Length: 245
Length: 314
Image 1: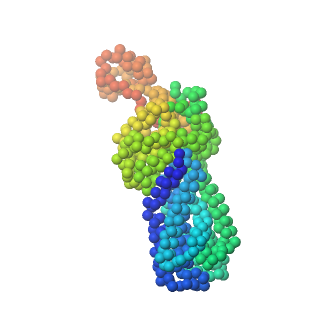
Image 2: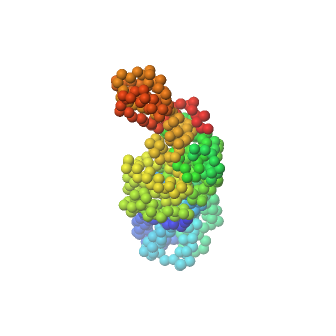
Image 3: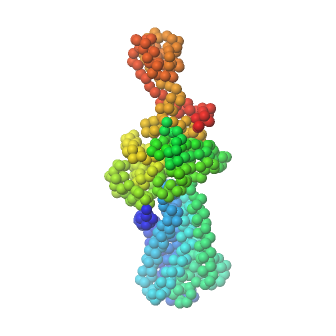
């Protein structure tokens, strides 16, 4: 009995899906060169203190990794649509091992997306000390925890028809409110709303490049809060979802 | 009779007083209204019934996929969850398609990896006639091929209990024959098999025992021959010019007689007695045919009549 083999086959499956490459890798990468490329010389993007290549590298990485994490939802919805969740539930694969496999795959995809944008960043001249690359990566991986749970939740609530638009629309809206396309400024209603979103703090991981602490206490609390709430909701949806498709 | 409740059922399957209703926009649907079945290890049992009889819901409760409103399920002396956790259950469920983006071989190997004592993947590919399709992607298969893959997935787990929900539904005649041939081989290894079907012929040909369901209840339970015996009758057809229908009706073992031209049809309570009596009284009778009632008739008679519900379930 090997949950490892299961994870391996599921990873193979995830890599064969073209949609993943398009939305988690190609799309953010192209946008990065389109947006950051012409502003390569901008050293202080709208008062953020960050160069345009650094700012948009993290922005696009947040978009790509968020999409990669929510891809779990598409995979689960796909399994449910063909009734494969039921086939798995009558196998000895435990619920914990199943969910672990899903999260491991999501993080693998997210790391791939992240690595792609880091490479693109260096192409546009981003140079950071090793410690900052690591700190940035760690913050993004922590900031993705709520999205790991959200992926599972959406996968159990939505169908294969609805999950595509939900992920596409949801990530676009979150990106807009989180300063992905342009910096939001440090005050006002939009800023207040943005601070309550986990995606905002993904983008804020860019502040590692300023030195010091990238996330305020608020940031840690928002990410922790969403992690707890979404994990509980995902667990509940997972348990309830035993019916036939 | 194989269905008798013996101490052996302690280690087999036991469904007791199962009840399940579903809420729908059109009011509650009572899918299963009290099912009691005990199955001994090594038995091959058909759950036979029309659509909506409660077969799939019963199977879902058997597998622990649906929680019964009342009643209990015991598999090999434990709960369904325990039996599943120990890898003792394999099932072919009624579903639309296969997991995509894998080859046939990968999918079967993936499922095999989840079980403690799987069969060899190549052996299963061979058993199910899938060697030629092993490298194809699952999403590119025909309906019959996909059904075979699902069968392979159930087999590779090498279970003690194999549950099949309408297993041959998408198969052609040839595929069906191959399927049941493989199943016979598997049953010969001492495995317990429970399958739902609405093909009467399959239940008749393959099962040791038929549990007939209608409207959420068990309406008959016994060997296929006994199910037929319950509704009477075998039929004798013969050519016998100028026969006296009244006299034919009076023959021992005959319940009814009809004549059309020179041919007669006798409905028998005991065809062995009736044929001897017929030939003794009418040596001229020719072109004799004796046929058993098709299970189809038994099926219509039993499921169409609610009066049988309570006594047959006992």
